Image (cartoon, rainbow, N blue to C red; front, side, top):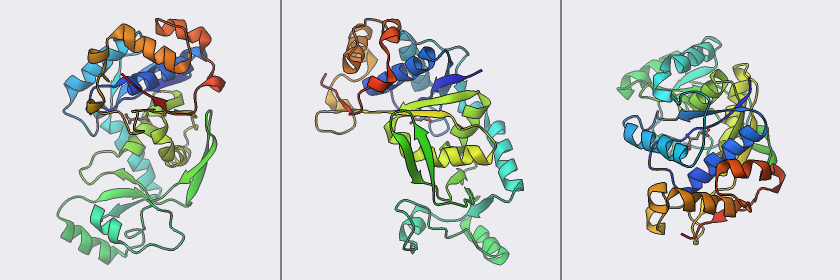
Length: 289
Ligand code: GLU
């Protein structure tokens, strides 16, 4: 059965922009008869259980409902290891011994896109690999051996979007699944076929869709929604004043979100009949507390 989702990372309390994205994800799912699921993307922030629980409480407080208990990524390492084994057995992974500095300083082929892994470890000999493994003193990261430089996804709000697909990391040097792999594996495992999230993640979607195809998963429908910015055009931060639910209050936060979308609503349920993806604002919402 099809489903949408919201997948916050528990690095900090949700701000009004995150809450608005969550409301939009819920509206997209509910307006299309999908289930709505919640996932805590805690691989990078594994000790932040309090923050994660506060995020879930805030999402409940603004009226969002989800159809199964929230999943926590740290409880699904077997799932990620399974996908990594599949890719490994197909010869699609290689060890990478590079530090960030190595990558920044590596010579780049003239056609290599900015931000792409330069391929330093892609074609090493067995002897070079064992020499580097010994020198590294920690387990290497694993990268995907890709056969393309770019991939195009279709986004409900952005149309066709073509972005870089480089040899991205699927397992980090500390043995933890990388974000791009975990998201793809979880979305497939949870039956999620609609991915609604902030448009800062649009550039990640070609990599994720490419990986999904390699693993034989269907590509989800994407909708990357415009972010909320402060009056200087920067991402919201504490110094911008009241930005979290604790500071704003539930009623006012819902009113602000409704207003930003041009709706008359005092609950998220009120927004449902007014929701029309084709009329969503394409520009960032400039938030003034
Ligand atoms: N956890 C990610 C974030 O909060 C979002 C993952 C996703 O929506 O795919 O930035």
